[in-house]
Image (cartoon, rainbow, N blue to C red; front, side, top):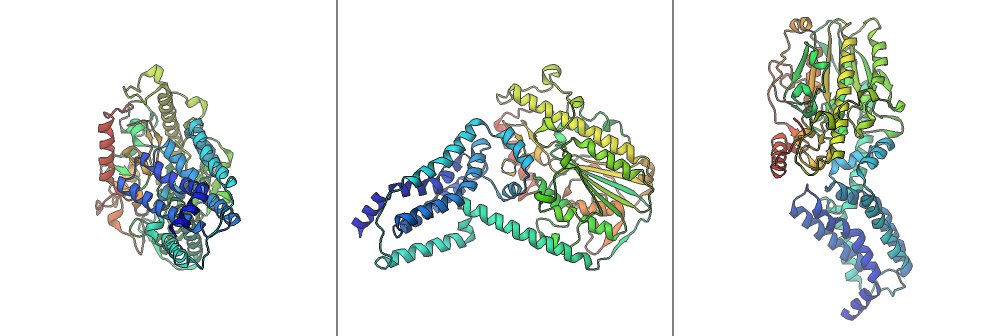
Length: 552
């Protein structure tokens, strides 16, 4: 038996190299990831090595033709996840987690092109290209081999098949196999989205009482920014004048301690637009969404977006946004955010017959920054103003130029918000709420610009939260408390907006409204991490880099 096995191994050297390549390259490269503990990496290597051994033994029972077919099938199912995981390991030094993988499924072609153009260097593309070509060569060069009899070695065959079955069916083990985990997440995401779509459609006919405690006709605008961290806003102390217009608004309340519940758009918007939270994800199905509440309260509801949604690029929050009575998708124009002002002006010049809720989703400070503002807002230049100073080796001239461009997006966003406020001033009982979906790290502590849960720092989740409400209207709303120092997460936004509008319904919790006198501070989470642990991670990174900051 031993002699037979040794001979089989000798004959199948290329098959062994192939399996090592597609199963172990990613786990063996994973130690360069900065976001996972060593024990997790060791467990991954151990599980994938075990799978390799089982598959290699099963190759002994195949004909040469079957070996090539199975190898080609393995290459087909591992190549896409392998390329994605390897690319992220090479350029970002992270191992992707579930939310980031789901974000990839929902990324449209335009975002993908910008991402590739900004992040992927020729060296990364070369590495990925080589990774994809080598297993094809190995398959082509596989030689004819003799196969073992299944009947003569039935216990070995059955043992291998049993181990393979349990490896793929036990979730804890399957999660350690990168491509199995990739497809598991994909199919769960597709099933979840289908279930949510069906449930949301069906509940439109189910009675759900929403009453209002404040009967005044009012216009509420909610503007959701993109990737804007408060660390680059002069309203929050940044050393560049990135908010020259908003800083002049006397009726603007600047909330000091607000965070996002994640650092990716999709999970944040799902949270903001529904009752779903970490403890109760099923609330996205069992309870009404934000637009549904306001529809039932008699509001005229609008959704204006300069971010892609619907159509061929459906995301898992589209079903929440599509509940608005009037929808305007401006993303196809591929223009900066001023395109939202024309439809907003049209709405605000119409007679106010019913109270209005207008939700606007900006493209904001989305990567790549230079595409997010007109030429007139190309204002900041580190060579002239000397505002970007640091001895950090990663703060090259190119990095400082990126900071300039990011600050230009913040400046432009300031003008959009200021114009929206000017339009709103013509209404009676108006108010506007602005916050960003999440923040952005822009060379704050290392050679990195962007947002990724796997590399999380406080600039990625510490967001602006602004409320514009005229003083006379604010004084008339004695039922509301405007304490700008409250610690808050936009995870509870649906309760807070309900409170501003005076909506009451089954499931409303006054203690979770930022504007309630009975507000209670809750534990704040960013993904699975507590906000305190994010601060700790950031402080640790800051200490290792000498806290070399870009200008605050």
